[in-house]
Length: 411
Image (cartoon, rainbow, N blue to C red; front, top):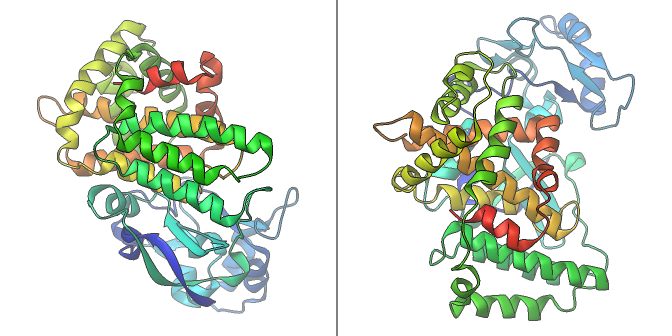
């Protein structure tokens, strides 16, 4: 273990695992991977209560193994809980100490990396407590320095893109964060400007250098400050059909996998809110497109009032995504990253609109809204088939240009 100062959102400094009080435990339903160093420690353990269980419940991966993903821990065949979970607490941590947890268990929901500027850490919102802290406090996504403990051998290093200096990349990342914090623009308008920026960044990337980053950031800063965004977007008409249909079909087809009671409650509420009562009750249902769209539009009208109780929720969700993924310099080209971000935003918007209908005649609570985002994040971030299908939404619809994508954005 080592300690260092890290840059992180303020909410991450407030996080503590709630353990047995968690409504959607990370120790249930997921295959837990074990790194090679931890696997060796388990094999050598002579602890009287755990030695036999460690030998029987932890198995080498015989194909596709890596030092980080060297073995797996069994899940109970009926409860789908980690076999080392006892009364909602980890018996490995209790008996052997936190230093004997695998990297996966020790770090979740934290995500850290070392950059040229130092260490950054955020949390994944698939954790219910992390989602509440990140989405419901106005100051949650203020960025602060904080002392952290971390495992030296599991800290990934984030290298600059070829042709870009760390300073140039940081200029772009800071602007993206500042743009998402611009309250004078609606959230969808901020995302529209972000798309234009990513399109321009593609040109710099093709040139193989970030020398034009400073000028590009200055240009876009002026566009926002001078009110030029409205001139670009005022005449656009929203395309509610594509917003609802493709995403609803994906949620209906991919959202049936067994999960916790908490996940099932959110899934059923979303389906009821989009008019799919039969599917919510476990039946098979294929709804006419106009029914889905009508329910979606109705929920959209109610959504601003619901979000008035949690005014930073959408902004904080997007900011956390931008920071967690080092946007727009993560995997793939900037515009492809932008498209993936937009589809995630569209799905969250759809699910929240549906929750507004499901709660009628009242409104969903801020906690209900945060839980909906958390269940989506758990599905997207930990179900690779769902994530791949979601990433393909724009490609399947043939929407590869900004003029089409902006109509997907506008509500």
